[in-house]
Amino acid sequence: MKIPVRFVTVSDSRRSVARIVHALMPVLIVALIAAIAAPARCGPPVANSIVLPHREETLLPYVARVYSDPAAKDDSDAYYEILKDGKPVYLQKTKQKGEKFYIGTMSKDDPEAAQVKMGMDITGDRQPDLVISEWTGGTNCCLVLHIFEIGPTFRILGTIDTKFAGAGPYFVRLDKNLQTTGMAIQISDWSFANWHADFADSPAPKVVLRFSDDAYRVSPDLMRDSAPTAKDLEARAALVRNYAPSAKGSAWPDAEVSPQLWAMMLDLIYSGNAGDAWKFLDKAWPPKIGGKEAFARDFRAQLAKSPYWPGVEAMNASKHPSDKNDQSAGPSPTATK
Image 1 (spheres, rainbow, N blue to C red):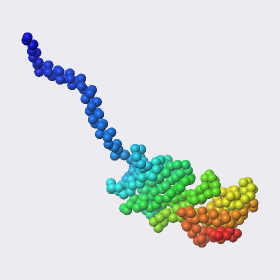
Image 2 (cartoon, one colour):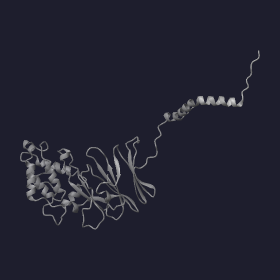
Image 3 (spheres, one colour):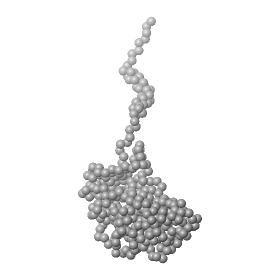
Image 4 (tube, one colour):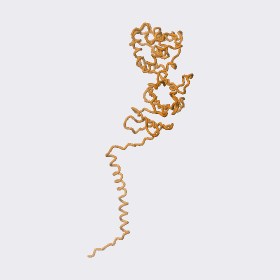
């Protein structure tokens, strides 16, 4: 029996190979994708190493850049860097998620934004400066100002924690008679936040800082002010004495005393009128509340916790042409240490 022999031409062979390849193409593609993806699943994910700045300003030879990295695995999802001649000279990262950095003020629409843009002379030493604002986030929180000199020498000039911020502006030209291009920094001292009162009722006296001797210091000349008139002080004392909850009696610290008492005392002390502050305590203390001496002791202890107290205390101890009262920062005559 003869077996028929079929001669296959080259063209027939090519057609067969093409059919096979065409049929296997989907399988080959799937296998290729799986082969590429398999190593990525076995090893750690490869992070995107390039994070572009979302804010950048330049004052040659300096460049300031602020970054936001939502893919960061730790809490450092935002940071900023300062470069000089293309080389990093400073970098700071956030400590917790939600914090943000800004070059200058937090908003370009802020009235003081133009005053603190990169390169302005903030301190008055005739060198260009840079302000980085750090917003730490959270309720009632929190603004930190980082100030750098970006002249021939790069320097960290100051880090000012404004705590609960408060109302701005922070950079102000208060001293119009001083021949300088610099600005003072005006903030609130929150050392008495939540001290025997809700936050909303907590007083925060104004503090004015000026750059002097390579640091930001309390500026007595910009903080001193005249004390209210005797009539005005008596009216305010009456409000404290007649504070309705104080009518229940009891003694400090359990008694309910109006926070307007220490709010007025702080305003007087932080304007250089400490003597009047202790006189106000004697006038305003509610007649049905005991423990005035204990209050004076606790008030002094809390006051000493303020980072600005040494400067405020020195301001009250120093003589000034406008001084008309005893400026002693000590307790009232009836209060014992």
